[in-house]
Image (cartoon, rainbow, N blue to C red; front, side):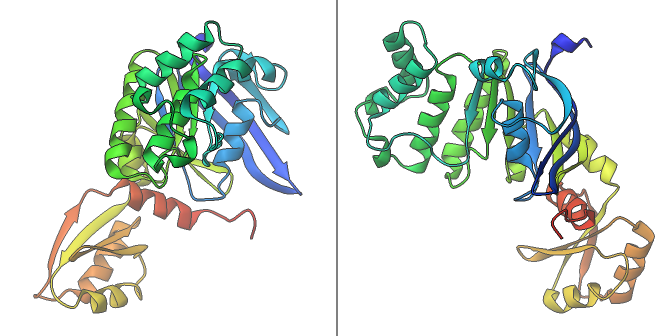
Length: 308
């Protein structure tokens, strides 16, 4: 695969603030037309990394390209070809939807500005609300406006920073349907999220904790590489079972899931011994496939806090 096949191709990207390394020597390649999920806890460096990719921050170390432009020397060009959707709604609440989109189109010097605004309104189902003030929109409609603004200059890459936080499930599903439609048309998407169901809708994933890239690959590859064993137990008095399990070596996670517990650990033999020590005929035990959430919590627990 040649360098031109990658929308993002960077190595050793590093950023420090006040002597603390918040992004530590990250290598990342994202193929054109790919939806790449970028996951990690709050404060893990995801937003800082995104801002370096789109030219808003300059890396302290590292090299590479974004859309073929050098991330150190061609930041102005990168900005012209990237759509960046921030965590916080950042448009003018006292302007209408049409006025907001027109303002963004002016910034990018979009040809046929009025036509571009109308196409953006139509594409995301905003035309009937075009005269409504942005401040009057619900979370889901604000999200659509923000996406329309990101797309108005026909970018080649979308950088979406937790775009569905606080949005209802129906709006989230509609948003992801649109993202997959855009990717099928050749647009590349790098998206940060805390939702595991969204992570599973990405083509590939990377997990960042405390500035370090801990794992990457498809959802299946990430789960397999963790070598995590998970059991599900059901029955009475599960709170007592959980308390007993937590006293044994080999038990990394004990999590309530409805009327069951999920028990996980990376050392299968120690985990089996712990379970044997608390087994009770009243309970049913079943080995299950570890989920992304189990894997990511395990990775986070094993990571070293760079601000500690």
